[in-house]
Image (cartoon, rainbow, N blue to C red; front, top):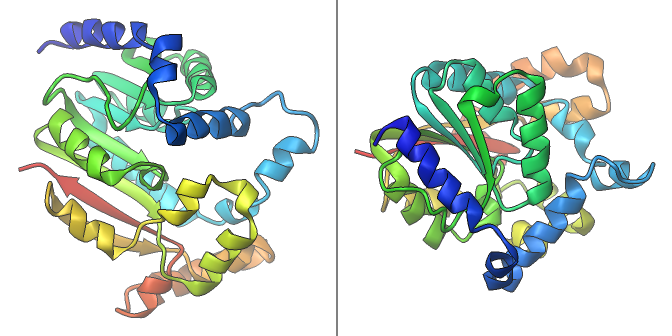
Length: 274
């Protein structure tokens, strides 16, 4: 399939995103749209946006994982069909497009996210090799074996993996690779924080944070490689920003230890289709 033929297929999928399609989605997915449309709304009244993103101070400490993801995208994008799966505001698709992806696709169930992503691509001058569409990540409508590279950044826990993993395997080409970036559901203190801040996530989301159980399930569909753990001590830099370099150094040492690494905030892993 040529890139132009793929774009024509994407046009067909995009045209199905209408009131009938929205009405066909189950309650869980309707709630995901509602939550993320509010979450991504940049026109919220003063104070409302901050309330929905009060955990941003923790994400501002995640330099190491962000650098790793950016380098991974740069390494795997050139000349490829790249999919930013549940793309949010499309930052990773735009990075892939800038890194030379033949086509960087962003798919998300939130129409507000897709509007934001398109605006970002226009601002960054990559409309030519990006394509954003609203859709269901568990039933993408993309052709079989049409994608070379996929990034799943902080979103697998929003999905039913019994549908998502087979769908990802279907659309990924043989020899294709996927990078998953996820929170890890092991550290009791982090789990307690999630329970104490229910307004920051949907009910489904907080009950489906990934663990090594999901890694085992992924092995039914893919070869799992390069599992890495990120951020434990560095979380404290949300309160002491000047300590971040030291705390990052501690993470790089201690998160290689077998038991300590399970206490990490996040982990990454690759899924390869043989």
